[in-house]
Each structure stands twice: as structure tokens, then as C-alpha cells.
Image 1 (cartoon, one colour):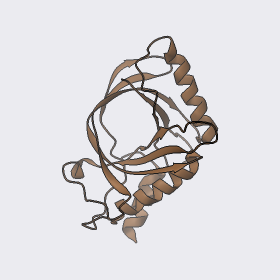
Image 2 (cartoon, helix red, strand yellow):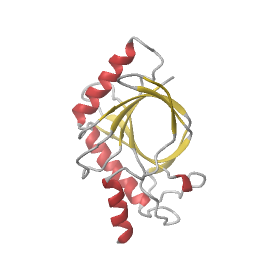
Image 3 (cartoon, one colour):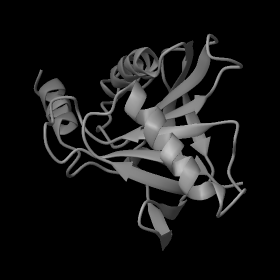
Image 4 (cartoon, rainbow, N blue to C red):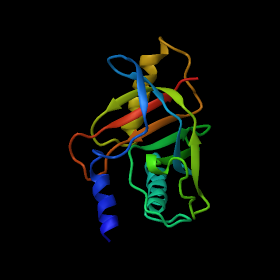
Length: 190
């Protein structure tokens, strides 16, 4: 019980949580270009019409993993952000593919516990560069899309070196954290 309360407590604020390492390569008023180091993430892929449903489904599958639903029954510390890779569907009434992921903390990077759930997997994410737009508040379906559109507008005159087949959202805070919230849009550079 203490472990569950500790994990939920760590989700309330992202302060003190392990995060993936990156270097800021350049910084503009509305975004920055970052180089992320290679890292392992625990992930779950699902198809839905709405991001909120996909994230909720994925979050709980991954939360069960860090609570010990893995082959060694190891409790894994919560990390930030919860990243979601969004691969848009073919049209407005089509399902999109969402891959919800938790960063694996440094102490488990070399040999993360293998998931028991056959739909949860360890993702070996290679290093990548991304254009990142940060924004505060409680993000919803509309704000994620609006912020992604703003980043797209900011970049359209500056670069064509962006992956167009997917993008990431990254949320750093629990729904219980009312102030100082951080959300990000990541457009991966080709």
C-alpha cells in the first residue's frame, strides 16, 4: 500500500522524477530544438478515435507495469513525461494509432523488467532531434491539436525536415496538480 501511495504521490508533481536526457541545440521564442539521447521506454500501442481515451487506456496498462506487473514483479519508479506518439488516421472519421510510453528510469535502462502483459512492450527509442513547443494548463484534445498547429506554423517557413507521419505529445503532470503544469509537442526532425 505504501508503494502505491508513493507512486501516486510522485505522479502528483513531476518534481524529482527521472526524465529522458536531452541537449538544447537552439532556442526560439516559441520552441526549441532538442537532441534526445537514446533510451528505453515501456510502451503500449492502441487505436482510438480520441487521444484522451487512448491515453487513459495506455496509462493504466503502463501504471500496472511499474506497480510490478512484470516478469520480475519489480516496482519501477514513476518518471516524466508520459509521451504519446500520434500517427493520424487516414481521415477525420478514422482511428489514429497512439503509442503511450513511460520513460524507463536510469537504474533499469540496461535491463528493464519484461512486461507480463503481452501488449505492453519495451521500446528501444534511438536518439533523435525534435522541435519542442511547451505550454501550460490542463491540456485537452483541442489544446493538443491547437498547439501542434502553432508549432507547425512556426516551423513551416524555417524547415521541411520534420517527420509528417507522426508527432508526440508529452505531459509532465498528474491531473491532481493544479499549478505549474507542463505540456509539450514534439515534432521529430528527419
